[in-house]
Length: 205
Image (tube, rainbow, N blue to C red; front, side, top):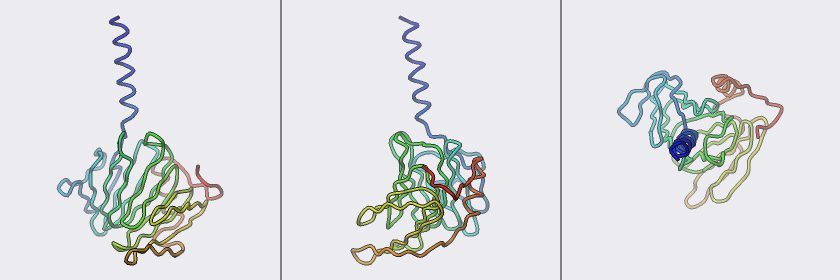
């Protein structure tokens, strides 16, 4: 009986370990704060609920479960809210890009939330910028997402497809602004951080 209890305890510990999200601040430059009062350090752990603020002429790179990477650029305010119960990455202002190659939520789907649009993401490379409180630029650089504002729109591309969402009174106006704020090299450099490459000939699944 004691052996059975020990075996079951071991299984429980392994199961709990697998549900954890290992999130690390990989590198940064300039003025980066965690929860408004803790200065960033390379290698520090990021946990659910942490708020990351990036000063002017600064950036930081965050790695999630070794095969997902996010870059936050100058002027960004970002809330990391992903664990075994939550699946939201919230960009309140600023600019982020991401390459996501390995699931880190229970069903493999997570959301990127901005003031004007929320994206449901799985295994995709993206770039988004909160231009103003009422205007968000969102590019699917490689892959597919479902974008929710007033309605749901699926956006997919092997090589950059972008929409701007602008809130006008009680409506959302959508336009196609083309490629802004980033280029192929932005994503290629980010993918290299996690030992991956971008294949612009096919869409990530």
